[in-house]
Image (cartoon, rainbow, N blue to C red; front, side, top):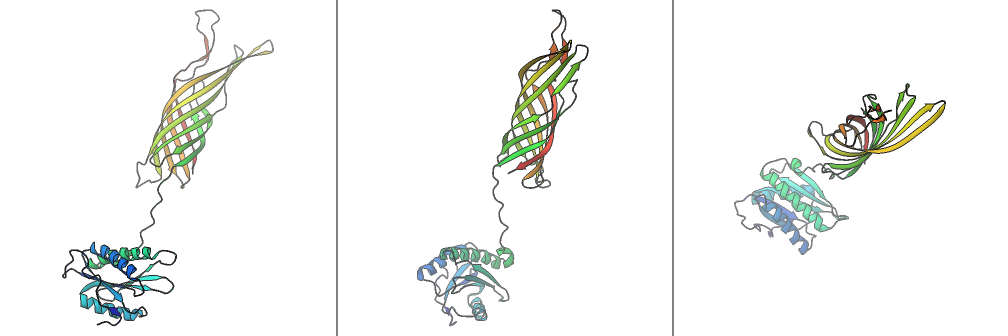
Amino acid sequence: MLASVVLGVWGALVVSGARADDPAIVFIAPPALSTELTDALDEAVSAQVSLTGARLVFLIAADDNSGLEERMSQAEALVQEHDAAGVFWIDARPNRRWFLYIMDRGGAHVVVRPLSVEGASIDAAIEAAAVIAGTASDALLKQQSLEGRLAAPPPAAPPPEAALRLELGYAGSVFAPSVPWIHGLWVGAAWLWPSGPYFGLSYVWSPPIRVSDDADEVTLELTRYPVWLQGGLRLKPLPSLLPRLDIAGELALGLEVRTRTTSRVISQLDARDRSTRATYLTSVRLVIEYRITDWLAILARVSPELTLNGFDYMKAPAKPGNPGLVYLSPYTLRFTAQLGLAIIR
């Protein structure tokens, strides 16, 4: 009937269970393919079209030089002959570029999709043609937009990876009744796992604390070296409204080495006494992180800190049994706040 199409149907009703009254989809293969590749194309397209509940009419074009108008005329005739929902045909160019044409039942709508063959295997092009045929057949049977169903999905976001977070910012804390607030600089680093946990180290620098007793002509200078080992779990409380906001609960253990230097002036002579002791601390913290960009964040941390082996700095009593003179009495439970920036790479 159609001189340019071999009407020996290779794939008609090839799907197990297909019935003559099922809606038909016509697929025309290019004539230049080998028998092996034609069979592979038939099998791949049949598998995809069968999922839509349609029966496949698989044909082979007799002429590969037909123009678009002639192909459309042939497709319109095949729609009438097989009562098909749509017709597909592959235009195989000599430069190894394939194009898949899709025409709906009315013949007024033709969609073209390129199939990359150059630089890739023909098997990959056959698989792509079959997947497109399955999706487009489902759209034709449901009378949906072909362009909408065949539109390329947005690229998937890359899976999250572990990252290093470098922290720098201001730190302030209460330390003792006589030293209500101490300013400092906090630096830290943490390793972030994509599932939420993290683990890191931090250090807080602050200027020495000086306490003077004019009556006793004594000056006490206390220098602190606190190092923290910390870990926590990050959560997104409002992922839809504030996707860049993370809130974390953090546990920390600290080692604070304190060096005390006492200076006493007696008759214009400067006598010095120095000692170093370590204190151990623990802390439960609330951490808020807001991503300004993918690699830069604002980081805030608030926490109470508990000293496990606290002690006072005092002068021994002049007589046994008398109370000593306390120069500095650090809090056992103190409050610390930090605010700064974090680089995440």
